[in-house]
Image (cartoon, rainbow, N blue to C red; front, side, top):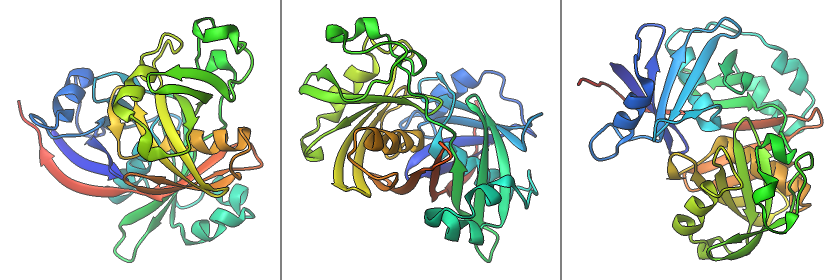
Length: 309
């Protein structure tokens, strides 16, 4: 199996060109290649495949083999993979018209040279990619879609929440939630996959390896959940630590950064446009007036190889 190791801010995946190769058991392959001691080492496996409704399709598997509906860092690398390997030759998109007047990313779009669509299990996403003079994609803007807020759709099983603090048809915003290290206010957002966001005073005091898995596997989250701990630096800037379901502590989470942006606005802590500092680097998010969240960040290739068993 020929593969490409890629990452967005250190959130790394093994990519396979499914236009040319068939992966018969992607669940098992994801587990094997993700092992950082006996495999390639990654947060999961992503297949770049043909699509009937978009330019390409992204099939994502976490490190434990579970299927992921969406990955913000992963989809930026899908754009880079598809553009640089000639899988798409799209040069125009409605994304330009929709975002032309949005100050934060207008400059980015003026420099974009390729527009494409990617089918995911969470729906079709529009992307704009910037290439350098050598044709290498280094920045990608993604229309991440509208956040999903009703508890039952995140999903959150409110019957398993302490004190009956929420209703299934209502958003969970600033609801007390008991963690091993204390009780914190929680806001839940789905960006095609579920996220629990906790704002804290000091990120250095967060016990990610204790609180992260506790949140991920809590009975209130029937599909498990990603946990994010956030420290506000200013209304336009935050720092984040992430525990991803199925992968553990990761360098970055794109959909999680989108959820943090939404949660910050809902809790009246941040503006709609925010720079998110993650262990692997920075992402820029904007919860636009059209209701969608737009994410801009890098995509990088680490190396290529051949996996044989």
